[in-house]
Amino acid sequence: MRYSPTLVDHFLNPRNAGMMRDPDGTGESEYAGCGDLARFFLRVREGRAVEVRVQTYGCGPTIAAASAASELARGRAVAHLCDLEADEVEAALGGLPEDRKHAAAVAAGGLRAAAHDHLSRESGRV
Amino acid sequence: MHAEAVRLTALRNRLWEGVRSRVPEVRLSGHPTDRLPGTASLLVRHVESESIVLGLDLKGIAVSAGSACTAGSVEPSHVLVAMSVPLDWAMGAVRCSLGGSTTPEDIDYVIECVDSVVKKLREALPVGAA
Image (tube, rainbow over the protein chains, first blue to last red):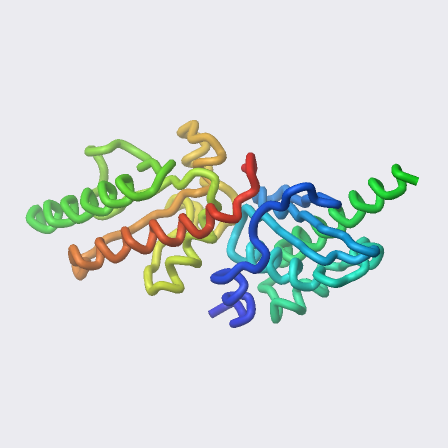
């Protein structure tokens, strides 16, 4: 099996899948090569992502990466999510084959976009 | 050989009729009758084919993504694109190949699994994606 047991688990049991009513931040990322997409929704309290939801279109690794990223994000400061790298998402999955590295990039990019969206909204309120 | 072709055609038709009756937004690519008896190329709208392949593989079912000519590629089949299949259908192309050992029970199991795998994948789709 070319995928780790952790990746397979996230694919079969994706965490935090779905939409969110009135999110405090929304963002998505797409991989142009195959159209894989991950869209994240954040609920933020006192600068932290207390709830995360994610919708995903794409290959199994992308679905798994989005799931893993949603778990990484919970409880984390939104400002830190702006710097989330694909390497961290890949590590949370137990690795990715070379031809599926884009899955971690899509997930990390989507979360960063959601974090930036929240901070933009906050700065607009000031 | 003719008897085997008849048997495979019946199984292939059983597969398609079963999937069509249970899975919304699925099509069969190619001519409905003038086709090889043992293959069925299913187009599942708005669901990426590799995720279907993986989901079925984990249930012990081996299928291929895309058309035969593009198996192993992450891009949509150039054949399906040339046939003017819209991208949101072409990206969900899954090819099923039946053989000498395929039984009606196998087909019924595949139908059940395609239904459950696609249903689960569609639950977390972004609205308006692909």
